[in-house]
Image (cartoon, rainbow, N blue to C red; front, top):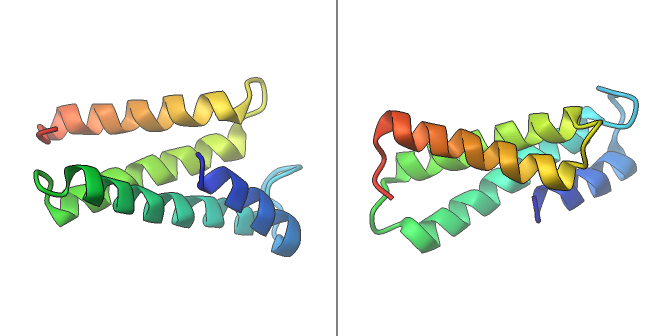
Length: 103
């Protein structure tokens, strides 16, 4: 959220051409996902790199980034600053539980 949301706003307003919703663009959403993924990989590598494989790090960061991007794209009734961390965290928690990833 701290990286993806500002990047989506910046890129979407400056270079956004393909409208996905009334206020969201494809370029903004993609910048959210990519920047969130990169930030997630960096943080997970630093914080849990000793216990997680590279593929687990990429999977967890990817799921969080994609779910966060969709949540940012479709948040209307509630503020996305609330819904993005809840949905991204919940999706990663479910994934960790289903796959038995040690954390």
